[in-house]
Length: 130
Image (tube, rainbow, N blue to C red; front, side):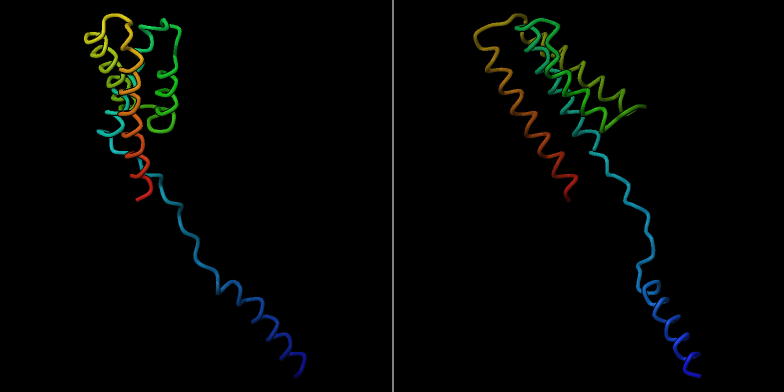
């Protein structure tokens, strides 16, 4: 009888950890930033790229690289990526119409554009934290 009681107690002790465990849950699907926010950031990056390449030449890919990194996270493929590419190009073309050559004020213009980009990036990051 003692052996039976010990075996039963041992079985119950082994079962308790299994009963106490939470059921496995599916991991949360990462939330994507709203398209209008990242589109505005893409357009801003295009503007910054336009100013920078006017002064440093087409080989300067500083802002373009930021854009590529953002797209690798936010839109690795598909229609969302196409929308971001179009926004970047729209910003680039628009800034080229406004700024036709490099001048003393170009670095200040790039800094203003970059500051706007930081505001947008911070707003997008807050979206992930909510």
